[in-house]
Image (cartoon, rainbow, N blue to C red; front, side):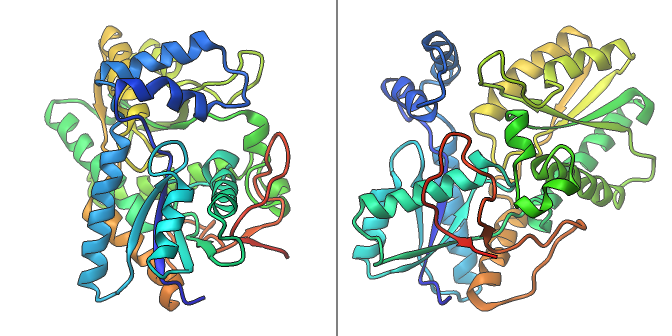
Length: 364
């Protein structure tokens, strides 16, 4: 398809104290999260002045994408829309249409397959078309999952290599160190149903976990290129659980994993937020605040590797992904799972409550 606009598609976040609770209510609508839990989480945002870092990070990413597209002489506008805060999808889609564009390519700030990380965005965009009265007047495609794309992997690998060099300079050996790759926990049932139905039998824990393991191994392989010594042991762990206590979610939690590491005489930990593209609230609060505090209480050195953010490698990689769809350029991946498909198959990452219309779906 000859796309004529790009929509940087993201989660959104509050930008004032007054927006915090309404934002959290939108995020958790229909999930039965107790009010006291929402109020507890609201304090994370209020500690930061009631402003989530994610919106400004995405505005900066939008600018960086425009610069890189211009550098490559690709003439296509980049818009920004959010699931849970201004600018909401219906308004942005109306703006895109008013500007004369009808074939939109969505670039989602989530690298992995899951209901909340992929299908829910596709549902939101389909509903956005309905709410904007653009059904049949505008089409929306979606950039493929990029968990193993060099642009996503290399910033983490470079950060890991630098962290290991820092610890070596401080006199620590690989045996003293544990690397924790962390991502957002989701219900086990959602993890197992993630990805295309035809792939479910291939991965016991689901595509979501398999993609994270693939990304982690790609980061480790690239980090080796900068290292003389052997790499320390590593684990994939989870964070930011938000569901009902009776529902099983992916484990181990990063806090519990840190305590186990301390009991094993670990002297330093490197935490790599492999599940995230930018340092938003779940990185700033859950990792740089809570996880760091736990590690320091346990007398372990703590290093948090930065997310890709607006690094040159990441921005360039995202434009590479856009070019795959805009001009059919070469598809690149650093794991046996990739390059991932451009379109989601019917039934992929099903809605756990009820089926809704989606964009960017391909019937096999």
